[in-house]
Length: 174
Figure 1 (cartoon, rainbow, N blue to C red):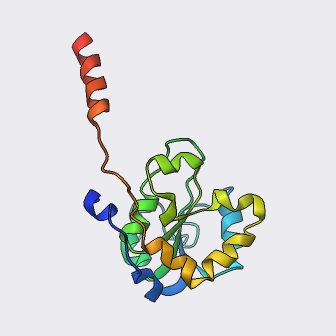
Figure 2: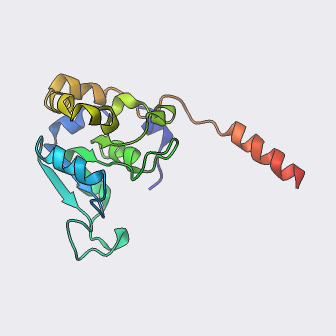
């Protein structure tokens, strides 16, 4: 399903506060750092796992019998760390969580703020050096959580004009 920029530019609201106070984690592996995040978070709040690592009958992402959006709709949080910290590398995980009205708990570099509003998701990169202590307070505080629902994921409409001009200049040289 395609994303609606207009929807991503509006706060998701507080629907997630009515959901089960648990984390959904959809993953195919427990390679570092996912194993660390899973181990730490399951001691703070229940984590429900889906995917190849939790069900050996699943061979790959396309052979599961569930849709991500349907599973995310049942949880307040989605543990959705990226596989690697690379500036500018952000995939579907954060917008998918936002679309499902869950709070994304991700792991990405600080430059994510160039593409997404860091006030509407939890970046584990901000808590890892503090052994996740402040994260416990954040997750268990209703007022803190409600702040996430009042923030849009995207603060300004993307503009590809500069990129298009750049590509046009390259094509004109060919």
